Length: 254
Image (tube, rainbow, N blue to C red; front, side, top):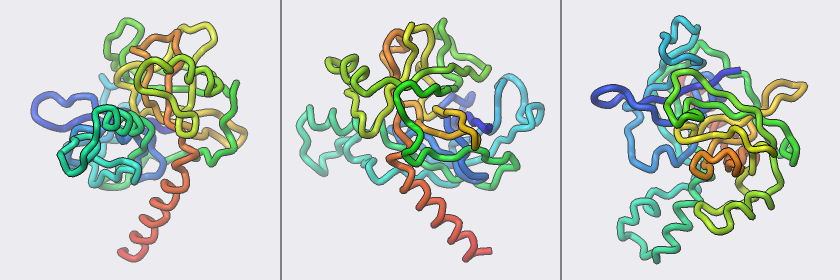
């Protein structure tokens, strides 16, 4: 299984940006809302197959690769985030559009293929169900609300959409079961937190790990309230088409 950590390579000390998943040797899947503030691809470094960030990539047989391109899913429209006056939105409408972007994915193309193999498949709509055991991971804040240098993992359970519809009925972002997954533990305990956005939600099958979601948001890191993840199955067709097109372009340009 391969994980990654994306860090900004701007001025000063690199800053954590988001998590993501290596789905091909030159392709990373993450969350589009990680790029709500415009950032150049050249300012991003992908830390691939990392566990302890205080060690070097070489020590962990990982890799550090630059990013050449950022592709946002067509449902993403930066104008709705910047509200630049090109369209007239009421305040509530603008809020609704921005929150819907919590469930949109992005693809990063690496500047070169990594030596790390991509060993995960994408959920095509046959995996998700209430009660499914899933695993979330990332370098977000821990239970003490401190950033960690060690990859954190937690096993969770998929709840029915009604659970999150109830929990988020009076707060923003709202929950949409058509594009999102409701995940948590029945007794509370642990969940995702700030800094985990874009990271993977996986489940293990007889054919290996399957990516079912990417981290979107939670209720201020409150483990008693389920977290919300973007569903991969509703974006799988776009992701697969993108990768097929990229392969064709590569074959045309040896």
